[in-house]
Amino acid sequence: MDKSYKIRCAYPAHRLSLSLGLDIAAINKPFDVNMINLGKSGGLSLSVVIGCVDNPQARISLAKSLELNSPGMAHRVLWLDGGNHEKSGQVLLGNMSGDEDLHNYAFPEKSGFCVGLPSPALIHPELLFNEQKPLSQNLSCAEQINAQSLSINLRVAAEINDYLRGIAFGGLRKFATYFDLQTGSSRSIYITKANILKSVYS
Image (cartoon, rainbow, N blue to C red; front, side):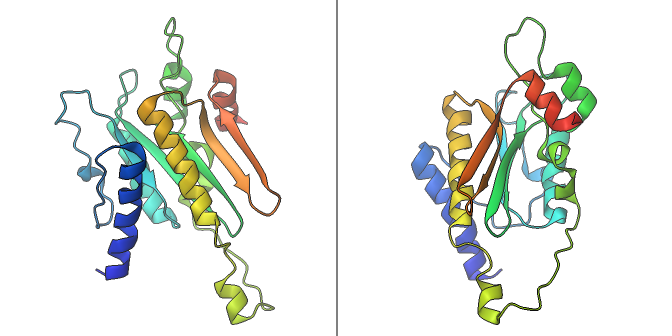
């Protein structure tokens, strides 16, 4: 495996370990759902699968991790997905891959809190399909190389870090965040039953 690729995998894990005070390690291999071992902690573990990929094949593999969750029972796998275009991006958090499960189990009666968030692929099914990008004939080589903003990946990473802090220490209020560097705009969708259902059914 390319040495630079290993560095790119290990560096974010190191930064997150320092930021969150948790033991986070990078696995320099393509993701496979069998890497998630839910049997070690007697049902008390929570696995957060973080996706920072740019192709649908990789996201399909990440989406399969939610199949380890059982409807109506405590979910032990969360999928946190970060993605971006040239100057805009989004971060999405979910643990339910079926819209029927979401409608029936997301807000248990008398619990007073939410236990189910829609999978990133439920909110944006296009994440699992190839996107055909038009090729501009008017860009120089330098412009094509620098089409993506230098700061967009840092912004995605910062948002992911904020979500992880909310998951680890409590107080998470949102499940989707969208931002645009060119306009300076940013908005989050907050965890309410109406917002969750609207994100899937609208």
